[in-house]
Image (cartoon, rainbow, N blue to C red; front, side):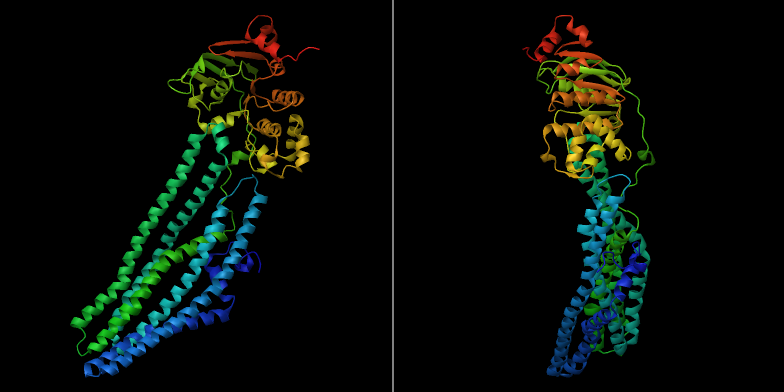
Length: 584
């Protein structure tokens, strides 16, 4: 069996109708056997009314109950024959749909892999999971059910009409006309109902995609302060899913109305005919006509309406979704996303910043003033627990100060949308985040364009990541985050920030797990990178290389160059002395 399901010329992109017709023609002998067994299943529909009429007219009304029972025994026998036919028809239907399911699974996997290796921008497409686990099963179940329903209705309708004609031609017309109008009207409404079903399927795919992206990127979302934006995206997808299912519920109301017309209107007409238009018609004939309507026709109409209205539409829409030649699950990438974006360097200005983690707790920061000029490199130093990491998070926009203002380029950070903040700055906490995926995906995660290998090579050599790239076997090697040391994870995260378009980079002891030469190399590369750099320093070498040093001591701050701060007594000179290695 080939991986791709049969379609026009064996190509993907076949319409659902053509696909189903071609699939049915793949084995004419199997189709013929299915029709024959369905005909056997429909024997009770053809004989029920005639047998009941004969049992009443020739048996019970003539005082011959044994004769009547004998004819009813024939009805029981015909029901047994019908059950045997139904059993075999179901088996033949399974022979159709099981190979179809296997082909669609193979095709779906093939298309998902093709999207993964040919996408211009790497992206996890979890809508393929929805196709493979849910939509293929919908097609399998719906195809088998619809084939059975259509065949049963066709044979039952023909049987009822023929049987009614042998009993009372006028009654046959009263049965035939409303059923024909019902089926025709429902077919006209199918296109609109299919659009509603398609909207429901797409909404389910989008919700699955958004939920996966949220769960996979929780740490990045928190680090970038994008919780609100991420929640809004998932909430929009969930609301769209709810709206789509509400429309499906309204569709059920339409189906119920159609079912009433096709299933109950013939019964009403027959009852009116029996009261006023059946002169000369025997009681057995009337009862036989009612048997045809109640036992055979109404269940067949009900199954057809429900089958076309639910199963049939789900089959056509879902199968069309699976057979789309274009990537239905892949969201279009905006035009600007493939072009490098040049962002301005950002200056950081903090005025009277205060922060505490609870209303009753002590202030971690109190009336702190900070200024970092555009393109400047500033190191933040201070004793442990003084609030350096808290200040870094506030400068990055992931924490909001209790009081005071934090501005980037003269704009209050709280007025900048979360997604814009993520593009403007890169914030690296002490514990670096490496996610499961390829090394390439980890490195270009913050990029807004496709990054060629040559650029990745330059960044890796600049940051000292080259040896690790060669060790793991290249950029497309799948990573296991737990297999890397803390220092290796920091190098990957630093290179990710180096490649990003951000023009404000904040390193909160993001090199603390590196040895001194590796730390110096990484920080030198970050300084050569365009943009503003703020480093929470834990070694004197980091402060020496900075344009200015911000000394943080609770309520007191001091800013100056490294050399100037060493010339006067104070906290910085004490810290610098502690950082210096002991003499021989």
